[in-house]
Structures are given as structure tokens and as C-alpha cells.
Image (tube, rainbow, N blue to C red; front, side, top):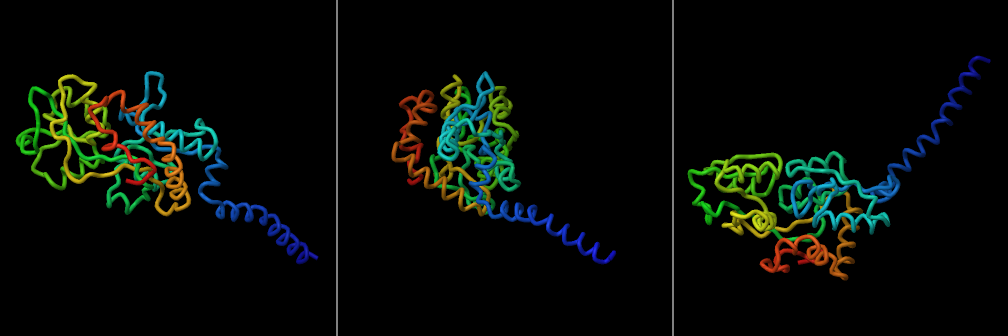
Length: 280
């Protein structure tokens, strides 16, 4: 009798596990997009201190070129741009946040490089970029040789950081984690110049009298693109398809006119900055 009862308990326990196992299997079978829809939000990693691309305004609201694009992708995916959860990133942790599932998409002025592409998957690009150097009008830096014996300010984890570390290790550098810290150091004369994406430096120099981008392009012309976790082909293909769709209405151009043109004015050729439809 006791043996029969024990067998009954084992069978009952096994049957009780069936719903849980089914749920677990269903969860594993769900696509990355279905999981986002189930969560009711998409987590997008952005900058909070890189105006005019991604920054917090005086009300603590996210603003900028990347933010406009992120909201539109959210609307296309979930039907409501307000269903985005912005996750603030630094340049150095963009890859890490994708690898550790802290974000679904990175839209943080993310330059495509072979090294990064080994760790994350980049969608098609929406912007062109090169490395630039900004300095004071009182002591202009117009070529790399001008930096000899002087200090160059760098934000960690940027392509400018990688470029100067690899190609000009002889140049003395001062590094910071945050873009805001780097710009503050430049204004405080803690360095002779600062290097970063030229698109960012053009905008910053326009808004800060007494500074000029003396070196407007170093290294190869690169592109900026959304990124997802390595192997997330479904979300990657969805972004690429959506960029093509948005290209038909020239959405990237509209985003540029809304956020970047008021700062750049007519001094920058829009065709040298944006990529419409995800294709150059």
C-alpha cells in the first residue's frame, strides 16, 4: 500500500511539473521580438551627455538625433514611441550592455569597427563619421604634429581613443569616462585639444565661442549604426527592414533637420553626414 502511495506521489509531482516545463519551453521558443512585445517596452541604450545626438534637457528628458530615431523605431515595433526605456550608456560600456542583456538595442552614436563587430551585430548605418580634433582659437591644432609636447583629451572607449592609442602612442593623453568631463577639461585648459567624432566636435565648436575643429578628419571615413546582441538575427533584420521603410519617407533627413541642422546650419553638407534607408 505504501509503495502504491509513493508511486502516486511521484506521478502527481511529475504531472505538476508539466505546465512549468511547457512555459519554460515556450519562453525559449519565443523570438526576441516577441519577448520585447511581451515586456511591453524596448530597452534602447543611448548617451545622456552627447548633445546634439543624445542628451538630457533641463527637464531630464532625453533629446537629440539618436533619440528621435530610437522613438520612431519603438513606434514601428510597439505602436507607441513612449514604450521605449532609455538606458544611459558611456562610450566604453556600449558593447558590455548588449553582451549582458541590459539593453535590446544600442543607439548611442555607435561607430562600426571590425573589433566591435566581433562582439555585437551592427545593423545598416544611418550616419557617416570620422575622427576630428578641436582646440582653442588661441592655440590652434591643425595637424597631429602640433600635438607634440602637448596633452590631448580623450573620452575612453571611443574610436578616437583607439585611433590615437594605436597610431600615435607618443602623444600624451588625458582620458575621461564621460564626454561632459572631456569637454570641461578642454574649457579648463587641462589639455591643448580634444579628439572625438568630427560630427560631435563640429556641433560643440558651433556652440562654444573660441574653439574650432582644426583637424576635421583623421583615419578612414566610418559609419554609425544601431547594434544588437551578437546572433540576434531577427531583431537585426527587423531594424534593417525598418530603416529601408523609413528611407522611403526620408525620415533620417527629417531627424537631421529637426536636431542637427539648427546647430550645423548650412556649413555642413547633409549628404556628407546622413545615410538614408540604411544604404550608402
